[in-house]
Image 1 (spheres, helix red, strand yellow):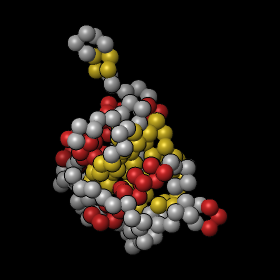
Image 2 (cartoon, rainbow, N blue to C red; image 1 turned 180 degrees about the vertical axis):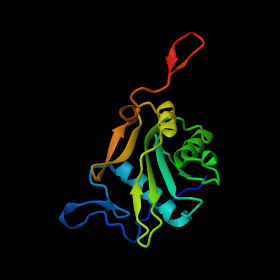
Image 3 (cartoon, rainbow, N blue to C red; image 1 turned 90 degrees about the horizontal axis):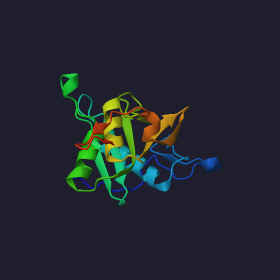
Length: 171
């Protein structure tokens, strides 16, 4: 598992004029300090490792114990073979036996002249995994142009639920 430092990025300023907070050029004023740290961690990983056609999304999650885990999107030549950054980060947390997700954010690098970063929502499969491994987890999304943390159950209102051997539903 790679541990990522949280040193400020060259274009990161905790306070912009007028009290506006940004991380990696992304406004982050409505996020908790923990969520800002996750956004910065995912952004730093992506700035170091982004490669067109291979890695264009990074994810960072924190668990209820406070540990941070990262994941990098793995692109495959066939779409169904690609692996989401969220899946990689969740897998890393599970390998460490740190099971419950508290917050998660994913960032995409836009391969353009500017090379902008942007917050992206998890796909449906990842939403299900986040719910399964963190029923009370917050997911950082871009909502009307600014980042906000929402509960995973709000972006996956009707999840698939398994039945236990006793016939009870479980997430």
